[in-house]
Image 1 (cartoon, helix red, strand yellow):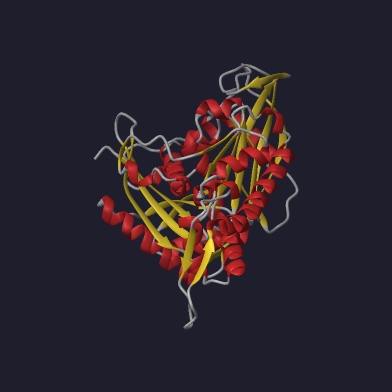
Image 2: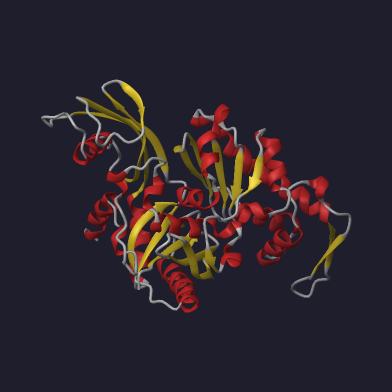
Length: 420
């Protein structure tokens, strides 16, 4: 079998989603199966109950296995949570080759140099993403390998997370009976699935509104420039409805999904009937009342995103505006509200880049991260906008379960987990 099969696992606050995909000889990506299970062992992107998370992972992966007709051994898993932080770093090395040609090993030395930064003991590097290389003072170099020079510098974007958060995710996957090929930041994963390459070039912000976290990623010149994860998302909207209307949590979620709108002026004039509980009479309320509860919280989420966009320093460079994805973006009117709050063009992002298989089933914003993880697994060079070979490595062809996807950082992460 010449196909390469990869499994992406999005462990979210409200759901666990497993996507099985393959790439054929013509490099077409086909989604073979998808599995979804309810998640109640995760809070704001962080594992809070190992056993419940393990059960949810097993249920989602087994469902995807049944649909795809394959046995899953290795997975690429997403990580989020408000513990994720990012910053810029620079490094410089001299080229010692006799002929002055820059090699893979020189670039690797340079990247190692950029990671020599003071960090708390409880944090570890998840990703090192090159922004640009400078050869002998000449900036704007995308791929320096093969060039001649004496001094090589680089500006990189470093994404860090709590060691304990990554270890707990790793533990859950192992207890569920699978191996972790790689851990990828979720907004990075989502960006592979929903952003066009020309959007990344002219400048765009991705806002992934999930259940427990809202993930933000800013791109310009085909490179990620800023990342952030904030702990205000769709569950807060549900909580507001539950408290404001005095209903059960399940009822609040149904009201949000079936009748909610993000703008009060979009609300219809009709009434909604809510069944009573505990022998109480049923309630009736207008849809505009529901919208008045939803809109302030959605505005808050978007205003926090606006702060992160401003912090990135690229707020004036976003010609492509904003792409909203994740389950929270499914509330009608979210894109219109985002355009008003952020003052940028906004669209809803749905997974792209899939050639065949169950395309219709996964063309939903809530599957963006899962699809993005498998696209990254099949094309790991996507992580930087340049054809950068050293950091990301090359996936091995003919690998049924993604065995060749472990990169240098994944190897380093395995050393933490070996200490368990």
